[in-house]
Image 1: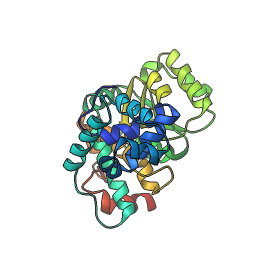
Image 2 (image 1 turned 45 degrees about the vertical axis):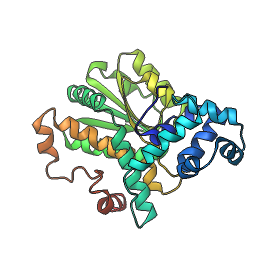
Image 3 (image 1 turned 90 degrees about the vertical axis):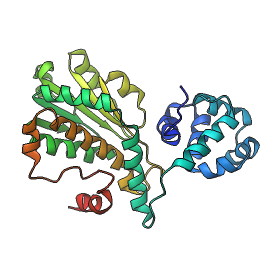
Amino acid sequence: MSQINTNLLINIRNEASGLSPILEKVSRFVAENPDFVMRHTITELADCIETSEGSITRFCRAFGFKGFSDFRTALALEQGAARPAVQGNEDIAAVVASIRDSHSIINTQELQAAAAWLHKVTNVTLYAVGTAVPVALFLQMNLIKMGKAASFVDRFYLTPASMMVEPQSQGIIVVHTEQTSADMMQALALAKQQGSRILSITRGSSAPLNRLSDWNLQAAVALKGEGEYGFAEIAGAMMVADRLLNALEEQDERYAACRQAHQKSIFSIESVTNKLSEYFMS
């Protein structure tokens, strides 16, 4: 990997699952305890994580740094420039952090290219399992409001009806936050062989989906661990989905007219604090 001077902790969280078990362990500790890392030596860090100094060095090199000293300096610079943490309710702070981090790493060029493709297709099939389902349903609901034929499938992916649609007119969107399934990957691989194009929205890096996807919009892995502060686990992916819908509106003013009567940009950084809970509880 090349050295990243901004969004270092976000990149570490997103790439952790693709590293070796030892380096993944180091990544998760660093991402969750940046203050500790900045204030301690490589020996103290290795002892705390119960690993070797060599593993710490390999971790630093995996993210483009010569060694721990360079890494710690970059981390300190990033943390010094970071925005103040949200005060008050910790649940809301985790949600805002997830959305803010996802907003900062989204690839605008990839987003615009995906929206231009989505504008051209007439039928959209959305795939998701587990925690990704609310994101897929959010997309489906809004795509239907914007005049697209959108269907959501979470099981029995290899359906005859979906295979009969012309690949050129069919768009496939797969949302992946933490879970996937063998039959979903099989269906996507088959659709790819038949000429369909695939847009994926992933939380963190997902190598199998990245290889299949024509476009990948990546959300940041939540700062908290799996299962903590439930909204935070999918809030970033929700924001990415909303950005995709907004980009689609820019392709044709009629899309915006279709959504005008409905709430927009509910996952923007500015509005999330007072709107997110209301959306999920409605």
